[in-house]
Length: 382
Image (cartoon, rainbow, N blue to C red; front, side, top):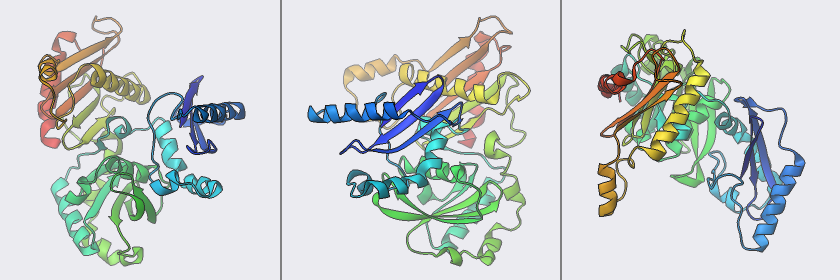
């Protein structure tokens, strides 16, 4: 994997590990696919570095980080045992939209947090009941309701999916062009990397899709209008889900007027709520708010907060160090004087971690109290 940035452009280059042959190259600039692709000379240079390192028994995994990626729509066997490079390159085209959505300025954050992007529907119990009944009638335990790439409701089996597929599946659905129904073969990087499953999707309303993960059965034709009408009529509870695509929280949920964006994570359930919709009439723009919260999450996770719950047993000295780690922190962009810059505050209580982006009017001495009050209000939702 090669990745580099030039003048705001991100390039992602995938090379075959055995030969160094380029499999695909994707470029993004300002959150959108870039017209200017990675120059052939750079691709050739990376290939040359790969071949030079291979002769010295050194493997080049990335020109920037040590991270690697397994594509959801291509099996692990096809990626590790390449028999026909041209055929693999053709198969990888099915993944381009998914890859581009990761390189672009997405409204989701699961790629960074490794938690499933969720929303809180106004009639959650009613939707959950319909979902469970439909799953039983359809003959599969893995069913979810997804709006704009975020999970509205899901069966218990769907929630038990491992990482990264629990994040990738709804993200994939959100990245695909609108379609009334789909029968999509997918590989599960954790659960089934060599044998494909079928991802069936049915559009109930624009941007609101019913997703089923199953084996050979049921055929898509079996999920007829009569079955959908039985479990998903009337449509009023579903219509209430449509505004949640970017808002995440139910309409009328009380938030302090200084809050410009929030990220709530449940580190044990691996779910999160992410929105930059509050107070849209104020600066900065939604795109800027997302970038600020993503950067702040990276900062506090790397430097301030302890390992996530459920980590392996630690040594005694590590346990002592954990006891000294802060449970809250804040960052002021600009001066600390009210009315200038923005404030970012993070708070962790038990398995929940809350990050807030606040307006310049919010005084620094009140940040922890505001974050604590907001976390207590959000706790019943996630």
